[in-house]
Image 1 (cartoon, one colour):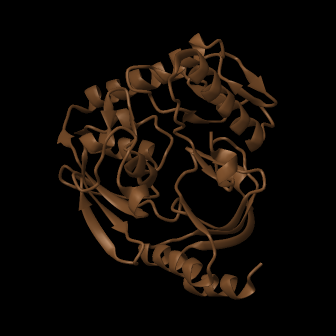
Image 2 (cartoon, rainbow, N blue to C red):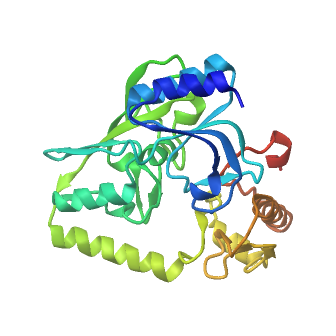
Length: 309
């Protein structure tokens, strides 16, 4: 452990929290992952900047995470500092039909706030388990709606330590894509432009989507949601099912029998088991249908060799 780095972090992070050897299984929806050497939950955007700056100055690897709903963290954990923009950073303010939301706020809470304010447009997001920061970075979507439909702009931290505001167009949003990862930006907050609506209709739509999720998705097991991006012209779940992989199991990891687009942790699954299962699905679908399956899940703490196909 780098004591000087740790002391420097603790000196800079006052509103937030700094810990050591934090088990990442406690912070991911897969409930999998070894310890991060250092774990920081900043409380302000300046503290996010300081956490990144301290890591860079010390030559220590860092990774920015949100709610951990789209991550597979190695069983060995992460040798460096994980900066979680989460519980300490989730303020939501309403100004007319515009919601300004800090990156750590959950999408579900954002959608509930919109409902309370009688604002329509965020219904699709009510059941997505991620945070706003991750949702902007991935252009999260479900049931015909996505972030790019409602976002006005987002404030980001650049690698040079500047605070920038990017319009929806500048974010370059498309299917499960934005410029955030490419440019190594950190999402700090976002503004959503919604429209006044009938609260009963908004609630009704949210209830309908919740019902569909419960019926079709394996919500009773830890997972990272849809494991693969939708290949152009195909549906990931159908390809996996047609490849005969429904219920395919490796240790505690399994292709869900309820929805083959989900890889689930049936209990005690390791990151290596999940990774091996994902690679087997990719291999079998490629062999049978000549279609490349690209994971939506991000891999943290693995070597490049481990995650390459």
